[in-house]
Image (cartoon, rainbow, N blue to C red; front, side, top):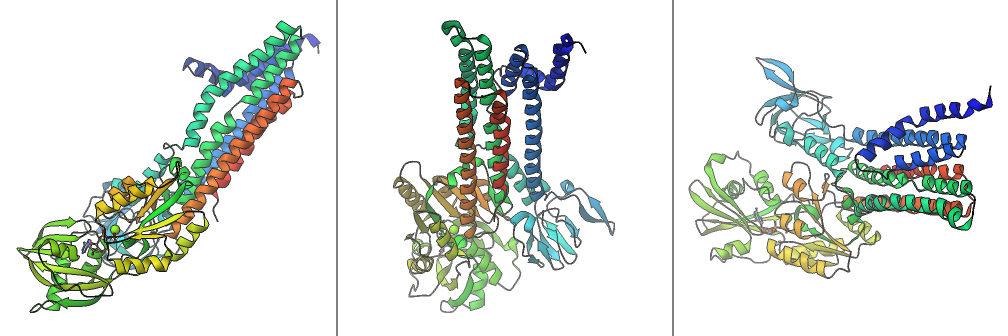
Length: 589
Ligand code: ADP
Ligand code: MG
């Protein structure tokens, strides 16, 4: 073959390899994004071709594309494993029509529809069991592998799987508002809330690439022009510069790292609404906990009923259960559960919650107030407040004292371990806030080894204390608040990082918080901190490693000690390593 054809053959090979990248570069220039990695690669490889370094020019493109392909694979894989975790979108629902079960799309369900869920099927909507009892696999939503029991009256959530026997369920929310839909929404949107580290990289790339291009141009031009050096040597060094400096290792691996960290958290039932919140978690010094429902189970058992003179115990319980029937407060739910009869909600009106004190409602035409001593005092009553072992719910009817119900709560089984784990992770101060009485609060705090405890608070006091604690923090350190989402939205907002318990079913908590713990477990806060720390460590490794290798090779190139092959490694190789490193954030022990 005639040697003279060689350049043309090489050009043909080059164009075949480079065409997609050339196309992208031209398209981006048209969109005003001149200095992107495609542009860098094109200039570098075209320059090499012009200098007659055909093999290297072609290699830049071939290896760059190979690298891109492998990165895409890696990104796809981690996305796929996250989506698999999130595979909770139900396919169909069984509805009875004319005595026969038909399959309909979950979107067609409305509140009130009765659906049938057979064993092995995914629950298509949130609802309440009306018939049948079974157990449900909730792991897709909570990451918890132990099945949960379901019986008439219990709530079931879309995305969980019926394990044993047929259930009939009354739908309580349309598909778009279901637990599964909310979780998917959350995870999909998480990617758009970017962490500072991520924003930094984007900004960095915007200035970095043009600067490198400028530096490469100077490197290629100045020595030959002013110092009588050989053009071919210095132009080549400039081109090597361009290849090394391609920022894709950072642009791809950093977002992927955050995405993987968020995925890892969601597989444990911890929903993190954005990379910025993972970053914030690693900066928490002070963590403030609400007591009821957060550190304690929020399931109160009635330990004694103490009616006033002339009042029957059953009537007292009934009054309380009716008055509390509209509230979601853990005390209300527990009182409703302890009432044996059926509550006829048409007899209750004007129900209102008095945050931090109790509730008031009109029941069968009489105004019932139900709550703590403070509430009674606001009515001008001063009932017996003698020493009691638990929390007292006082009841008044039309301003007349009717008696009190003593209830008590239990500390969650993992609260103590959670506090230890958080301390071990370096959190400085663990604080408990509660509206409950001092003796109970102090006992819980002592048992859990908390650093500070504030009791008998009204919701506004909780906000004030949170703000005060926040002021005491060193700069850039964060105060986190963990609550159950019942009347603590203002504190969630006042804190630097809001964490809500009880994602299952509690829409308000999911909305207001930055991080949602689906399992109601305080120990998940420690798990979240651990995942966040690991993710941030990986991110900083990626940044450090890429910059170190690149700066090193740039220096070598300027001194004439680097060739195109080393440059390609510094670009494609580093990028691959950073991407693979990022994927480690997916794995949690
Ligand atoms: P916590 O700070 O422990 O979460 P809250 O601020 O919700 O507690 O309530 C503080 C206190 O107010 C409770 O300990 C209870 O005595 C009273 N209380 C609040 N809500 C209710 C209610 N729905 N029924 C009865 N008592 C209530
Ligand atoms: Mg509370």
